[in-house]
Image 1 (spheres, helix red, strand yellow):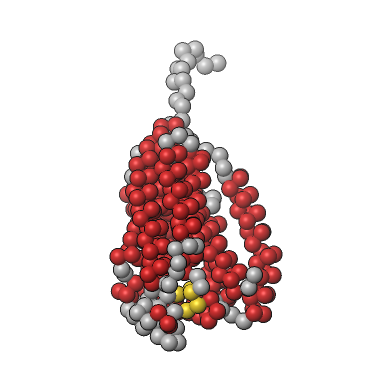
Image 2: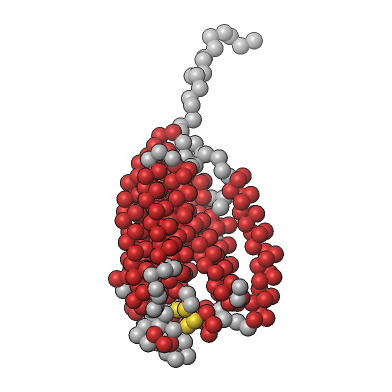
Length: 348
């Protein structure tokens, strides 16, 4: 396989890993104000993602670094065109991290409620921005003949890209709810299950609509045939259908299907994009391609060796982490012991 194609596929894998893992912890964050009834249940939600959320961020770092090294022209154009959006994204990522650390610094209900809402709003905002950003790669942004962005911040918004952002929010929320069904216990588990069933319908409708729209946009704006983009789109639609059905009976399989549906959404976008990495609109001829945006062969070869050595280590470490923290977390009131008895005997 050509190294340029290999690295395009690897970047798609990195983004898929990021959406798969960060998707459910963003989803848990979005549900913080709505599912738990008290601070104990809210603590269960924080504990469910507390040991893993920062490790999940590794996939974003790897995806960004791989894009910078393998496709510098793509990286440069994307960061210049999405500059304001990425600044907002960085701000939301920072305040979300702060919310994890600062929430426990004070026992005041108002303090904790404030940082809970910060986490929820930041989680939803991050999902929205990622959906809009990745959809713009396919939908097209104004580029000149040098591959430089010539538009404004408002050029990033279109019915399709905003639909993508809303769809990612719905998918992440559903993904997060199915994840919680694997971690919660007791009455809280029942409530989480009802939430997952409630979210299954909007996630299914929006997910199916977005996947179908993505195939249509690829054919209309990126000169693609129906195949191969329809293949991962069909897998994603089937996965979301199964998730909506299984969430009522088999929580483990439902989580697996929301994971597959999330990954299939990313794969559909990248399959629809190739052989371009950024579509130019209205001047389609100015689009950045895998060939025109890539680094030299030697750079890609060195990166391939580094990836071969490092990626398995990351995968093994994360697999071990999830195995260690796989157990359910209870949220029930501690059982009250018998009332202490007052002694009627005089002390010696």
